[in-house]
Image 1 (cartoon, rainbow, N blue to C red):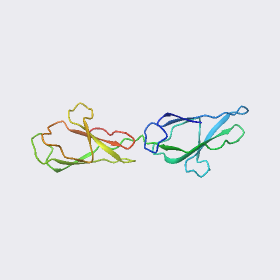
Image 2 (image 1 turned 180 degrees about the vertical axis):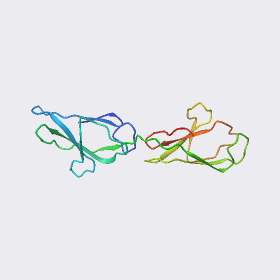
Image 3 (image 1 turned 60 degrees about the horizontal axis):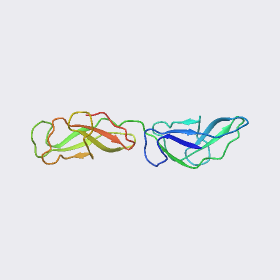
Image 4 (image 1 turned 120 degrees about the vertical axis):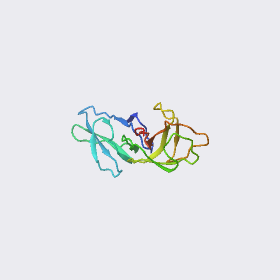
Length: 168
């Protein structure tokens, strides 16, 4: 059987997948488990009863089977999704398309945020109070609304698995 201790069986990037595999063999015991990540019925690797996929592990065709102490193999489990990303995005770069980085009233601020990541950026968080907490979110283009005022703007990237970069 397959038990998700953390993360879940969904076709989305996650940053905390931890799976326990269990099976029984009353004669020789379970020696290890085989992993088939491409659905072809051939084991790609082996694992113990606790499977924590490595950063960048990405497959919608994962199956597991138990191997006992003398090499007998169980049938494959049903297919499960595993998309593991534990890598934080890079700290965003800020490009002023118009306006400038000065603490004065301006009427034309238009900022492009960019960051690199192994699975892609989902959105950017903005800390406009300077307390280290996200106050709101934006896409890669930030145009403050009328009356927006802050001399403490900081940005950070959030990837598809929920990993956060450092603040700018």
